[in-house]
Length: 178
Image 1 (cartoon, rainbow, N blue to C red):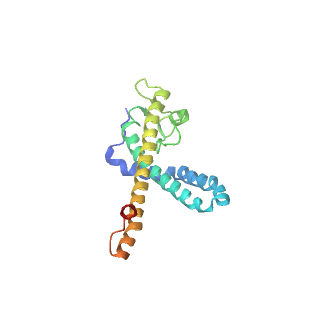
Image 2 (cartoon, one colour; image 1 turned 90 degrees about the vertical axis):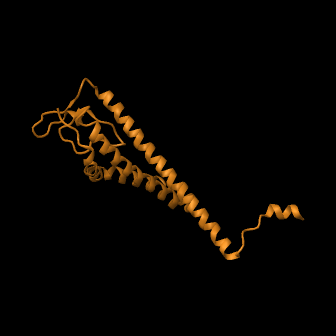
Image 3 (cartoon, rainbow, N blue to C red; image 1 turned 135 degrees about the vertical axis):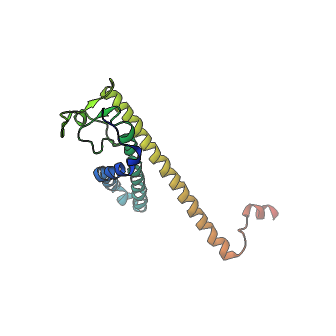
């Protein structure tokens, strides 16, 4: 039986994910840039923020995908299946294809699926990993956006208070006094 990669090898697996999957993520960024082009015609001011936010999400997805690839290499590859030319089998964009397992490389003529698992069941495990990757990326993205909004709100309020030297006046209280 083939042993999966130990969890301490995660940085190496993340490196290989970056090395071989950057093109998928770059393609996603280019697709956003192209599909957002109509904003330049109709809402010019929205183009840069939309593209910037999409690039942020894709970069976060890239990091989440690298992390999940390390977990995939440690817990799925070698335990549930074996592919002969293993570099990176996990991607949040596409499931395991039959040719990934069936292709031969080196001393092995073909890979295999272990313990009576089917390709469909293996792809259900992939779906769990992929959904986790997308959910982690979305949650991290939303958290960063909220943090940035709070930070920008504080910056917008603080200069006014500093300039006046006193706290801002509550207009609703002033209206009731008169």
